[in-house]
Every structure is written in C-alpha cells, then in structure tokens.
Length: 219
Figure 1 (tube, rainbow, N blue to C red):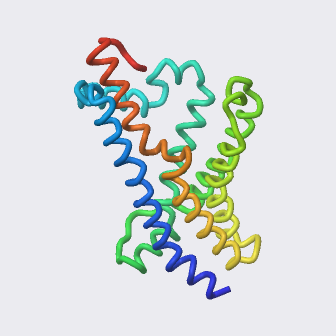
Figure 2: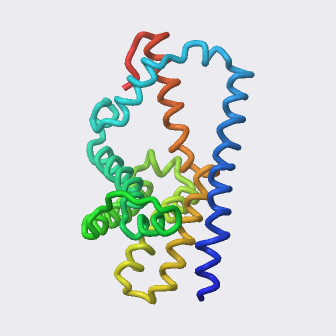
C-alpha cells in the first residue's frame, strides 16, 4: 500500500501535471492558429473593452438575462464553481503538502467550512445529473460522457471527504482521493471540462462582436 501511495503522490503526480499543461497547450495553440488561418477577420474586431465587459457580465450572478430566467440553475452553477475552485486551493491538508514540498503556504479555510463546500460540490453534481434527466431540452443533448464527467468531478470531493472523516480505511481512501484528483486534472484538456479555458475566449469573441460590430449587448 505504501508503494502505491508513493507512486500516486510522486511519479503519477508529475505525469498528471505534464498531461494537464501539455494537453491544454495542445488544445489551445492549434485552435488559435486555425482561427488565424481560416477566420482571421475574427481577430480584427477583438476588443479588450468589449471582451472585459462581456466577461464581467457573465461572471457576476444574475447580470445576464439568461441567468435571471433560470435562477435556480444560476445559483447552483455559481456556488458549484466557487466551491470547486476555492476548496482545493484553501484546504489545510493541501496547503500542508505545498508547504512540505515547496515551502509555500497561505491562509486555509476552517475545516467545517471546507466540509460544507465539499458537500456543496457533491450535491451540485447530483443536481446537474438529475437536471440532465428531468429537463427534456437538456436530456436531448446529454450523452453518457456527460455523466462520466460529473462522476469524475465529484470523485475527488467524495473520496477527500471520506478520507478526512476516516469512515473508511484512511490510506486506501487517501490513495483514491489523490488518484481521482489526478484523473480529473488530466481529463480537463480532453473533455468538456476544457470550457474552463474556452469560456474566456468565447465571451471575449462574442462580446467583441456584439459590442464592436452589432452595437448590442450579449448578456
């Protein structure tokens, strides 16, 4: 068991970072050059002003008409993304690992708040899965891959929660937690999770077109 733990925390972790960074560059750089080659006119009207205006309206809750029309989805989506990003960064046990490996540390969330945020992520994944089953317009565009992505996203939080509370054999659950986190990180460039990168470009492109060309709002 110790050998597996050392492997997932050592060589496999480095491989994860290589796949994540390399895969992200592999997806983003060709996309830029393809755009520049086939639709260079898009770049001609890209505007920092309209890009930031659009991005701001889509990262502030209820700042767009679409969000106001779907209040429950808006709240769930914002809470989910905040907890998904903030919890791993401000979790005390993660910060301790950074401190041990790189002598870097920062403020940590109280454990009880991290627990709540973890449960929010898990609950939100369940909500999104049911939503894909219940709403016909969402179910129509849903495939098995969407449920797999939700499971991949929820797994590090479920295993981390169980490992922290030690309701199941701690070392086994810790290994599963690290492994599921690595799988999620490696999946980002090659699945719909890549929208964490594409979002910014899509909003910049749409905002520039609506603001600079159509003289209209895109929110």
